[in-house]
Image (cartoon, rainbow, N blue to C red; front, side):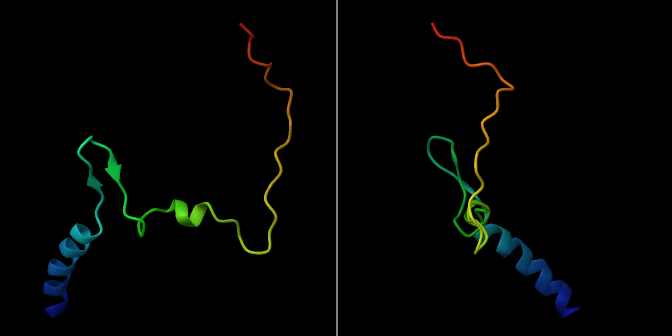
Length: 64
């Protein structure tokens, strides 16, 4: 019974504490602890960054 009451109180509190907010101009501010880019942008330790392969599949952009 206590676990149900704790979950009922804790879940909304955690959602409110870690939620995204909107700034005055309407943009969304994501808290740094929720921002997954901090994990995705890092390369795994001991690996080298991938090289970009030049491809001629797409034509060059038109020059005006």
